[in-house]
Amino acid sequence: MRLNPVAPEIIPHQASEDIVVDGVLIEKGSTLYGSVGAVFANPENFPEPEKFIPDRFMKNGEYVHDLRVCSFSVGLRYCIGKQIAIEEQFIFATNIVREFRLVRTSGNMDIAEDLSMRFPKHSMMRFERRRSN
Image (cartoon, rainbow, N blue to C red):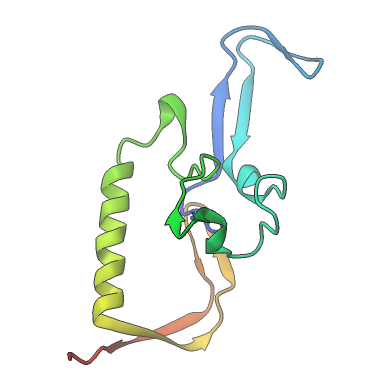
C-alpha cells in the first residue's frame, strides 16, 4: 500500500486562518494540497523508498505500525471504511494464498497509472490450486 496506493494521493485542505509556515504566509481560505505519495516516497521517511522491504516494519519479529503509512488518510478525514477494507483484504488474501499458488505467466509488474487506481500494466497470472494434505 505504501509503494502502490490504490486511491488518489492528493488530499486537499483549506486554511481556516492566516498562518506563517517556514516564513511563508498562507492566507485564510487558501487551498493546500497534501501528498500522501510524497510522504511514502521521501527517503527521510523510508530509506530506499522505491524498494519493497517488508522488514522495515518489523521489530523483534513483530509488525510495528508506522504512522507515516497513512493509506487511509489521517485525522478528521480518516477513511471510515478502513477497518472493513483491511479485514476484507486480509480475508481475501489469506484465502487466495491458502487455496492457490499464483504463477505469473507473462508480463511484468510495472505499474500502469490510472486516474483512480494503480495495477500491473501487462501481467497475466494463473491460479494453481494447492493440493490438500
